Image (tube, rainbow, N blue to C red):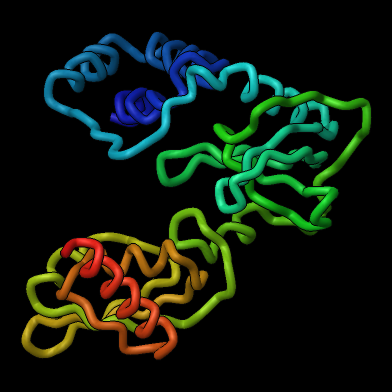
Length: 241
C-alpha cells in the first residue's frame, strides 16, 4: 500500500527530477519484492485510490527545482528574482537554501534571506529566475526545520497564540476525526459537543480554517481572534449580497 500511496502523492511533481528520482526508487523497491508481494502491489491499483485535493503542478518549474536541489546539495547560495504576492512586486534576493518543503499542495523553499537577515519561506512557483553562486553557505547547527514550521496551521507562520474552539454536535463528528495540528487537544462535552485547543500561528490562514466550519464552531478564546472571525464573516456576507 505504501508504494501505491507514494506514487499518487508524487503526481504534483511530475516532470521534475525529484519525481523521476523518487519514481525510479519506488520502481526498484517494487521490483525487489517477492512475487506474492509484487502481485499484491499490482492488485492494490484495482481497489485503492488517492485524491490529492487542491495542489499546484510543477512540471514547468523543473529547471528551478533542479537548481535548488543542486544548490542545497552543494551548500551554495542562490540569487533569484522573486515575486511577492502580498506586495505585488518582483525583487532580487540572495538566500542560503536550507530545505524544500511540500505542504498544503505546494512546494516551498526554506532559506536564510540576506536582505531580511532572517529565515524565510519562498513559494517555488513564484521564483522568476535563479542562479547558483560560488558563495558557500551552511545551515546553522542549531536550526531545526520541523521546529521552524511547527506553528503554522498549514503554511503561514506568525505570532503563536493559544486557541480554544467549541464545536456543535454536528460539526464535532467531522472535526474530531482529523489531526489538524500536532498541538491540538480534544475534550468531548455533553450533548455531543467538542472543545478543541491548539497553539498555532495567528494568521489569515487560521481565520479561513475556522470559517470553513461555518456556524458549527465558536471561538472561545482569544477574544482578538473571535473578532477577526466575525469581521471576516461580515465581509463575506457583504460580498455575497
